Image 1: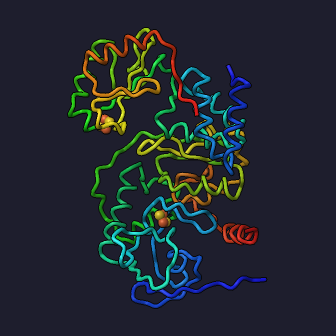
Image 2: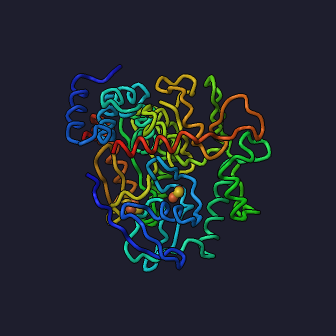
Image 3: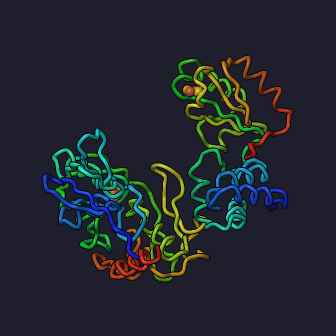
Length: 239
Length: 170
Ligand code: FES
Ligand code: FES
């Protein structure tokens, strides 16, 4: 028998909206056509609240709350697009750009990159932080795929899709802070990984040009996400 | 080298305490680190992953995140010298310079630079040890030493040099 779902009503950007009690603010906003930028979130994967792009203002809360991991509450009053939030979002994007080497013009994902398109959408025309230009490796040891750490923003979508959906858990994150990096197995070359099933899900959930298919030239790497809603359904059905 | 049966059993015991075996990663790594003489070579991480039946990438991620898991061989005794604010104000800098000169090492966080030529000590700078009331302070192996002076540090280290290593065991 279907359990009855409780409904909560709340205000988002001065609009009254209804939501199921188990929904997050991000889900409700998306259902209602309210735009909230998000890079680490991907429907079907466990939310981790890592990128902080989805921060919103909730009345009565001094802190900003990440919409992707905040559940709706009765009577909540949420603002998603104040000047302060817009400024912070731009700064977060700028920090991503300054942290590694995101050179769109020579990137295989140019034109198909979530980081790039969010920056365009939110009006990031300058990066006000000094670029770090780290020296990071590109691992092309896998037959079909490449990982370019220069483009990685550590959203951990690859880690989660590999663990939660493929069940291989080839990917993880090593180190901490500025030295953190995604790894395959014991930080071995990807091509030598014993657990990788070469399914390619990590490549297609990656928001940037960090995980790509081999043999793509500049701007050729569009990601295919058609499989995700299906997997989400399967997963929810199981729960 | 590989984990002893005793260590493996210990890891199994620890894992049984948690609803999910993956939760035992940190204590299991401590068991392995003690077995391997105070540091974690990759083989040790593989063994921990096998013993817990969790992905090796996860174990590697945890081991590299936490600074108390050493990824290179350390000296017989690890000295964690607090160089954070309270200790710094109370003279940690003098202690640091003293030890650098005395042992001809560099206390900069690198295990290689911080290890004495005879391999007796590895001295590492650490952030607040949560013993600011006894600043300046240090931990040698698993023991806290507080209100340090140059004389006190010299005495403590001379004494410990000949004693066996004490490993943290969960
Ligand atoms: S989408 Fe919410 S923190 Fe990244
Ligand atoms: S600053 Fe050294 S213990 Fe807190």
